Image (cartoon, rainbow, N blue to C red; front, side, top):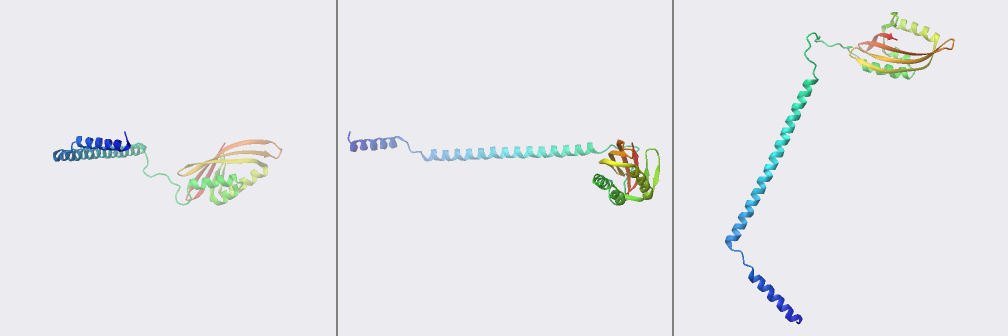
Length: 207
């Protein structure tokens, strides 16, 4: 078959196929459009339903979270004790026990215990030793310190803390000291400090 005859045969086949394909009627086209609109509305309704369910789920989750937060807050509150004072204890105005405690520990560990005393001790401080001895005022503290340093050499010293409450703080001291005869001793003691209006008014040492 020549190229010419082959082309004519292909054109005839295409024309025959087109003639065999029926042209949609007006009614069919209308039905197709309505079906398309129905499908579109159905898809929109389905999407709207999904969005509403998502919003409802989010709202329920937020409500549950608020409820859980309220319950946690309620659980964190102390019970209504019958014998609890209405007014809480306080150290008063000025630097807080935490601020003073942190400063004292930092200065002590930097080898500046004297600076901690001059900065934070009240002039009428009480310094109480484990045996019950009470040294009055900064002069009493200075007298005690002068005696102690004249008889001991600090080899190493470290302060830990502070451990704070509303009216004061506690510091744990660890030291290695050497006496005049060359004997070394490891010491560990707690210093309990009472704070009033930004100053240490009492210190008590416990071995």
